[in-house]
Length: 173
Ligand SMILES: CC(C)(COP(=O)(O)OP(=O)(O)OC[C@H]1O[C@@H](n2cnc3c(N)ncnc32)[C@H](O)[C@@H]1OP(=O)(O)O)[C@@H](O)C(=O)NCCC(=O)NCCS
Image 1 (cartoon, protein in one colour):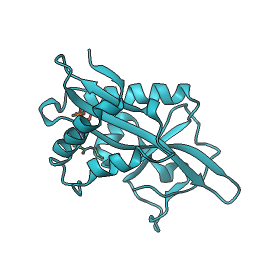
Image 2 (cartoon, helix red, strand yellow):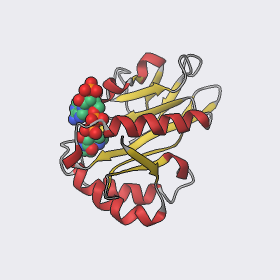
Image 3 (cartoon, protein in one colour):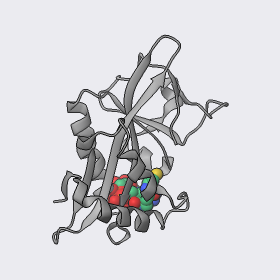
Image 4 (tube, protein in one colour):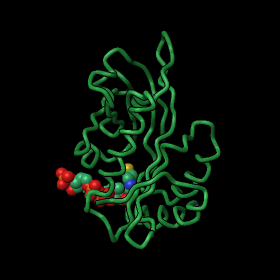
């Protein structure tokens, strides 16, 4: 049983060190994810209920996830959905289902808040296992994706068919 709860301000310092340590193992990291998260929490796109942490039996933090608000811009209108960034797990706990459990819990809360979809830029070999698909399959394109075939820009519907009538451009890191 993986223990997951909402992040609270007194977790921030421990989460900072967790994010730094975890992303140090990633070849995609620019080494600034922990600072990015500190800045993200100050923005009005941040949603406290969608910032979660996982604890081990001793209460030490071993995983975190944040979903924040983002606009999809189309010619007709704007839609507000979610971006997943960052997510990480302590390296001592990789491959035990913690990232999957964090996503499942965050998606359940997001769905109950009436969000329809979650977007991200990330490693397709990992996120496809969770059910993410490239956004071009939904007619939604990353602003930098001039060829409209970027596998790294991905979406996950919280409700089947939720992106069927949405198209447009997204601008996420
Ligand atoms: C990527 C990361 C979050 C995965 O966390 P995790 O708790 O080990 O993942 P899980 O155990 O929940 O794995 C879920 C599935 O993805 C697979 N998986 C895990 N890490 C993977 C990886 N690096 N590449 C491809 N697949 C991976 C698992 O085998 C599992 O698949 P399965 O259910 O079909 O067996 C973790 O390695 C991490 O924190 N890395 C450093 C930070 C990072 O890269 N964050 C993501 C930024 S895009």
